[in-house]
Image (cartoon, rainbow, N blue to C red):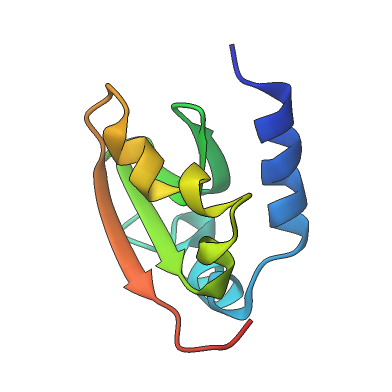
Amino acid sequence: ATDARKVRLARGLRRRPTRAEVFAWRLLRDRKMLGLKFRRQQVLCGHVVDFYCAALRLVVEIDGAVHDDAERGPNGMRGARRSSRAVASASFASRTHD
């Protein structure tokens, strides 16, 4: 069962993406990346991650100031990596100041 609070948080984050997330989503959406389907602001193992590809079990995080936020930071990739599921992850630094 998915935590309703996390789902609401993910929906809110989808409505207010950072500039770096907007750029990344343009590259990942509509199966533009090697024909793979990515989801954005996905609840995974009780954590909200920026992008997730289920076929590869791959988490993509765009790190920036927003990830230092107590509400969001622990919810992302670091938490998903600690989960019991085997998930590969990639983290990219944002060069924008959001």
